[in-house]
Image (cartoon, helix red, strand yellow):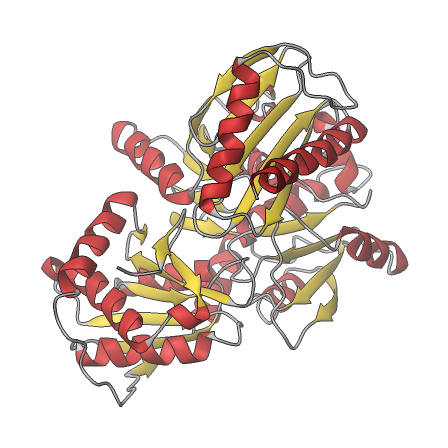
Length: 471
């Protein structure tokens, strides 16, 4: 039984678990799951983690043994790999652990149509388990058929859709850290007219999580010191955007998604239950559909809607900001995977329409509701299950939480993914274990930043107390 697990997107686990055998078995299972489509080439790329080159080599060796010609996309954002798969009409494998710590890594599987669905995951797991009966061959060579300029292809997508210098007049900071986009986004933004200040490049991997940013003070200070309009960045594999406004605050990913959808003229948006209630309340989009957390669920519901209404402009996104474009619009062909670049560009272009040209001005309509996301690492699945049980028991028994801010009576409880509670005081508390790492998510929605921060501190402490009391 494999220790590597599918989470909300891809197979992930500790670097030490990506053995020669496991890399071969999962690669072979993916190949077997798409065998009926008769592909003979596979696109492979990776992120900047220290462990990625070695895992990538193992995947290439496995593909060679399985009869595939390997097209090497190099070190590029995950959406660039997906765009390459779509353009070349080949499947692909991205070696990345996204935002999780450096001692972990992962494999993301792609088809020409976009990222795989939950049904594809089930098929891969079926063939993986069938393959456990067979011995793994000894692999010694790693042959690449051709190197593909995925970065150039990806840049062209946006330069063609937004020609000229539409970002002229904007001074943008790019926090490079170990983002795989650090050599791609700054020159693209510069070519589009922005004045780009790069900073914070790291020689080691930094697990930047766009839902629980740990460097806000540093980013805000840099913004002020260098008179920037805003700071942008991504997570490790650049499928999630990070935007810090002139007010020194992280712009929530779902608000980026809403602004992008409004700019692009989208008619239907699909997003997970962890997103803010402001999305529907804004009235900006005709139809809002809510699903479980994870891009495969968002993508699945998007595809259902596209089949039903093929001429409707449809998009989806997650609370972390990763944007999926389901319909052709404004010269952009669909890209059925999370993308960090499109929501960033739409935010910048929307800023250009404002007077004054400030991010905080663009965000004014959303100032009356604040959505925060918190992360606690090191909570195992059994501990997370206990936390949720205790949370539900306390709700069911009508026991008050001794929070400094009164929550009042329970209004609506949603268990679509984790436990999300709307209290009658209009505060929202959502507890949810991660699907692919020993992490626990807390989402808070409130009427002010101060109240949201107090509630976040309280529930982070409350979750830790539940775990400690069971130890």
